Length: 195
Image (cartoon, rainbow, N blue to C red; front, side, top):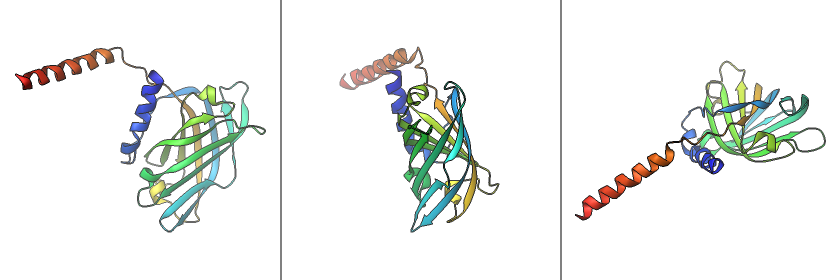
């Protein structure tokens, strides 16, 4: 039940995430994947792509012994509304198999940072990360304070990335009582209209 409610909340935030707000999602301290990479932008005909020049080598902490994985994030969007039209995928591999792969389900951003939430997780580490993985891309360019809106065609950007497990948001104990209270108020209002 908690997972279903949290999934709905993540998906419901997609509409307001395009308004330049950070997601501020709680994350677990482990597992995490840290990586550095050069990302290249391609802008043509009102559409843009951002991809990693090479597969980033990331360090995984909290999934057994520290290991190295390849990390690849691919993003595409309409330049007139980058955060509202963003699509993307996450691919990681531990050399032989898929380690953690997912589809983009939500996006937010802050100065120099793009926050990407991936769902439908698959791979050998999917159960460790849970339902959602948060990928935070920190752009090191000091002039790129709104990363996706300011990308230039053919430019390469240094990016530090972190992949984290999104912590489930606990259902407040008073939520059923609050829902009951709202139902009571609606019932009283309907009763007053009929009398």
